Length: 295
Image 1 (cartoon, rainbow, N blue to C red):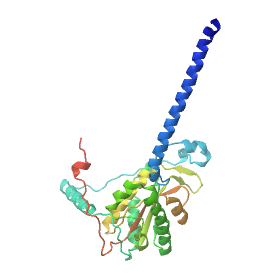
Image 2: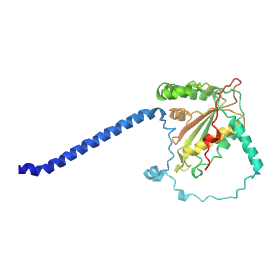
Image 3: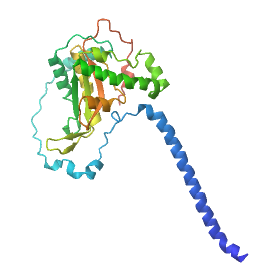
Image 4: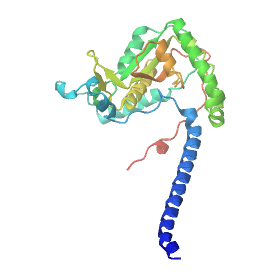
């Protein structure tokens, strides 16, 4: 009896350890199960090129310090006076109303004319996109302009092959159902027809002539802002486009266009005049009160 009494605390301790171990295992299984369900739910949306990787982290720098530029070696940037045009309140209001009216006509157009567009115009709209702000003025964008018919067709083949899989397997019923009202599918005829395709790549880091790498802060946000300015510039000259993010096509298109590993495809824009029989959905925009909060 005395022996049993002396063993009881040990027995209880061992039993507690076993219970704790079983409890932790159970929690791990539940966590894995939730992660598995989450992965299955999010899998259709996953695209390595389109994932947001804008967090500022020095982890990659620390691993290979010799590969990265030491920014303390850079020269100080000279500052110059800035005196932009200033308008009267009346003129400001008039200009804002005119610009809104112009941009309110902007629509996503999938019916594009093959009529040639002056290349100088494309050059200027891309120059305009390049005026966008960027993290630490790294300008982390590359605009690949494609006009060659063979290359455009190869791009179409890559995109349609992946898009058919997206529509039938990856995207899920709800996504496909939501797209039905827009009458869109995996067939992208405009990729052959449009006189220009503009593929916008984000540079996840820079590569200097010396071979050193340079951190590109907020590269995805910076390039996204640039794309917004590009859309406005296209609207300003009377050209149309439709914003496309070809899921899971980035690596193949990067290889086709011989882009380096630090560039990832963010968006693709077919650009041209609207076709004579172009139609767009009769969409309504949200009222100002639905998109703006004044504090």
